[in-house]
Structures are given as structure tokens and as C-alpha cells.
Length: 144
Length: 430
Image (tube, rainbow over the protein chains, first blue to last red):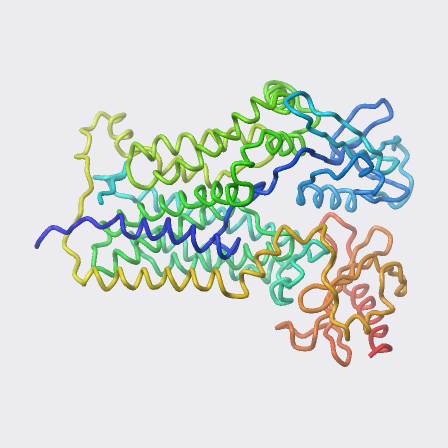
């Protein structure tokens, strides 16, 4: 029996080239993906939702439970007075879902005042970014 | 052209098990994720109702998960067994896409294993088609898996270049990604590191450049053991760095990189004091079938795939992923909008209040609330879903999904009552 020419490179090349070409056309449809996360993230700002306690300390919103807020608009127009800002879709969605699923229907005895704050960073050159805190809602919540 | 691997001279059994384990992990993770999400305003606005119907219903998706796990077990048992592998890939894909439709888009952690499995299967199928013996076919499969995994990184860097060109080499992009995701109260080295990146554009810019270099190095990854070791190490460092700075952790990709990038069989042999195996590929016996014909078939399949990818409606479907959250919602069909005129946000339906009403799943999705309880109602044209609908009107079927598991329970009777009220409101307008 004769020895074969080693052509293992051929299917490997087809996989590499094919995956790239098909994914760039198709977008993300399993198992193809362009892995374009953050590809369009060219930005000069950043933003996220945080919780600020009565002493001014900043926390992740998940550090509190049982939120009771007057009204809740997580991206109010008032926070755009300094210009548009960059957000990450799933980070915003998860924050909204957390607040929706950890709200209290009635007053909780050990709740404390907490401000929901949209913190916005703006980059101006190489130095430290400028920081703005925009209050989104005034709430009562319980520390976890 | 020659291709060599760090596994040359050794069986690929361990790699086959690792690949099967990664896909099994993805199966369970995706199934669990699908079971804990529900259609909402973030769902794909054009997702078919039958795909959204799996969200929040673990038992509906269970047959796909079981199929995937059984097929993966069969795949792992014998070398170059391709049919179970293809079945597993399709079953995992179904779960991942159902989950992606229910939220704002797919979780990319699932795609590294999928791409590696795709590469393994394409190359193994090719090798079997030209008559290679199973052990030899698995050598091809390993090269294919390495190429599939490498392609994900090539795509990542290509996407950045296509979206922003050299403009992506911009320190502010990385600073924004870190600041939006690093824990605000983190302490220790990781916090100091994140703060340094946020405060020093030059450091952030250097890391961005290194990220692009690491991802671009994947072009060389499949072809030579040294390239695999260098590129694999760069990519592992990239993943580790990302995990330190953000919550983004890609364990499947890291496991596959670790398994495929280094000559583990030779290392183990050396540690055990055995003689190293002869290096170099073992080209095996001559193929039993004409290679030219099989090559032409593979190229044909590739071109057909590219044609579908670039011209079919699937493209417009996937483009909406991750881009519809804050955009204006698509309009409801006129007849449905008229039927839902009394069910706009703020309207009361018995004890329920309509929180949102949006186009989805070739119909509409209403989000109803009653105190802390949440109920989602899908209103779709007759015959859109493969199950008997709990309520119907003249033109529409109504389905419901309850809130997340951590939300107060909505009983079946309460949900049926709400559906009856919604159906009555629609009937008055039909």
C-alpha cells in the first residue's frame, strides 16, 4: 500500500477561510459568529448605573435589594445634558432586570435612602476621564 | 503545503474527550440559560413564535439537550465518528439560537466550542470521504478544530478592523469597556490595574494593540506546533487579562486553547520518563477515493454556505441581534395594532396593567403587571405555534409566559384569567 500525500492542510484551510467568509456574511448564527462585540466601541465616553448610599459611597446596584423608587427611567434625557454617552446593551438590560426583579411592593423596615446614579465618564485626551454623576431615581433599598 | 501539530505521533483521544466535554458543558449552560429567560422587550423582534416558545420552558428544550448529550457521548467513544458530532452540533445550535432569540442576542461563549467542533467535523468528514482510516482521520479532525477555533479570533480582529479600521486602536474603547464593567468597589491588584488603564490612555492603547496582535496571530495558529504555542499563549493571556478587567470569562475557549496549543502527550511521556515519540505527521495510507472529487465537493459546500450567508434572509435576521434594544421598536401590523388599541401601556385589564406592548414573533408581546407579578402574553396569528393555544380570538392565538423564577408566582388560573381578559379586549376590536 502506498503512502499518501499529506493533505490535512486542505480541510483546515477550508475551515478557516470558510468560517471567516460565512460568518462575515451571516453574522452570528451558531456556530458562526463574527465576534464583533465591542468592534463598534469607538467612543469617548462610558456610562453605567450605580447605587449611591446616604454617605455618598458608590456601590453596585446588586449590593441592595427591595428597591422602592418613585419613578424609574434608567436613561433619562436629563443625563444627556452633557452630550450622548456610551452604554453596553446587556449591562443595561441586566441592570434593568435586576431592579425590576428586586423591587419591593411595600415599605421595608430596614430600608435606607439610596440614589440610583448614572455615572458617566468622558475622555478628553490621555489623562484621567471627567466623571459626572446623574441621579436617575431616589429610592429606598436594603443592603444585602 | 505541510501542516504539523503538537500531537503528531500521538492519538487525539484526549482532544476528542475535551471537545465533547466542552460541548456538553455548553449544552447544559445554554439549556439552563434558556430555562431562566422569558420573551421580553429585549427579545428579537422578528424571532418566530415557535422559537420564543422554548424560553422559560425547560422541559420543551430538554429533548434537544438530551439529544446533544447522548450524541456527544457517542462522538467521544470512537475516533472520527462524525454523524453523532453533527447531530450534537445541531442540537446545541437549536438551544443557543432559542436563547439568543429570547434575549438581545447570542452569548458568544458558546461559539468557541461550536466553531472547534465544526472544524473537527468538516475535516473528519473530508478525511473519511477520501477513505482515511479513523485514527488518521482524527489527525485531520484535530487540524480542523484548531482552524475552527483560530477562525473565531481572526473574525474578532477582522470585525474590529471592518467596523473601525485603525481607529479601533483607540485607548478610549478599552477604557470604556473596563469602566462600564469593572466592579466599582473592587480592591487589590485587579482594582489598581483597572484604575491604571482607565487613567492612562497610553497603557490602555498598548493593551488594545496587544489584543489585536494576539487575535491576528491566530492566522498562523493551525499550521505549525511553534505557531500554536506562541499564538495560543498570547490568546490565553488575552483571555486572562479580559477576565481580570471585566466579568467576561470565556472558559470554553481557554480550555480548548490550552488543549490544542501545547504538546501534552509528549509532556506527559517525558514526565513519566518515557521515550519521546517520533515527531512529524504520519500521513497514513493512500486514500481509497479520488481526492480531487472530495475536494471539489468541499469547495462546493463552502461556496454554497457563503452564498446562503451573504444573500439569504438569515442575514437580515442576525443583523438585528444586539442592535434592537434602544432602537425604535418595529411597527405592529396594522390589523394587529387595531386589535390591540385598548391594550396600550397603562391600560388596565382586570387586576393587570399593561406595562408594554411591542411587535414580536410575527405578532405582539404584552407585558402585564399586577403588583410585583409579571406576565408576558404573546398574541400571534392563528396557527403560528405548534401547541394548542390556551386562548384564541377570531384571528389570533394567545400564549403566556410567567415571570422569572425569582419573581412572585403567577398561577395557571391567574394567567388563564388574564388571557381571557386580553382575548375579550381583542375580540371587541376585531
